[in-house]
Figure 1 (tube, rainbow, N blue to C red):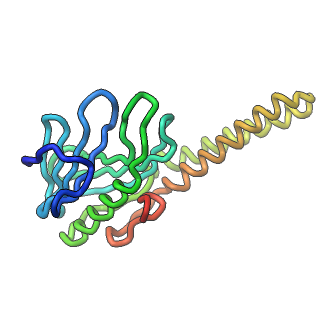
Figure 2 (cartoon, one colour; figure 1 turned 180 degrees about the vertical axis):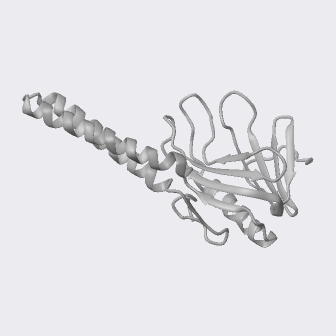
Figure 3 (spheres, rainbow, N blue to C red; figure 1 turned 120 degrees about the vertical axis):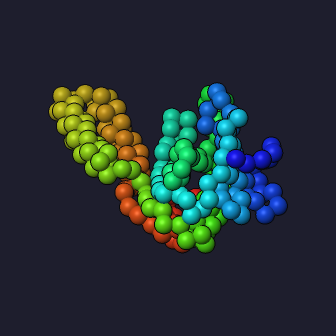
Length: 201
């Protein structure tokens, strides 16, 4: 267990610190990079995981309705609960500002320490392949369906409806394309972080 005092979202001494609030309800998550491991605290719960005792790390892109630019790092220790580090923080129901600079710096330093510790963790990017490929198929099917509706509306001279459907189709393809492009399943080395999943990298 750690003895972390209250700290701002910044580096204190030689221990980089990052914090964020997942939601308005509940405590904020606070992470500190100790010399011997990753220390964390959320409310009354806290712990510490040595860098060489991490089994798996996944970086992904997870936009929400309140923040379209949101990055996530999931960390599975060999012992203890999964840890989630997000690049946004909740200030209100609709205000979830991005913390790209602080998040990116923290994730880069965390991986530098993983590499220095010689961890044998699995470093993964994007979505689980079991979910990714069916998601691609569903997006393609939906896109074809909306394209057919747009053509049908044009044939009926329903130009307003055609414009509405076509606009929705374009927006969906753009957002879906960004989401699936960033979340393509893959692997990486801690010395070579994926730039599309670590802001400022």
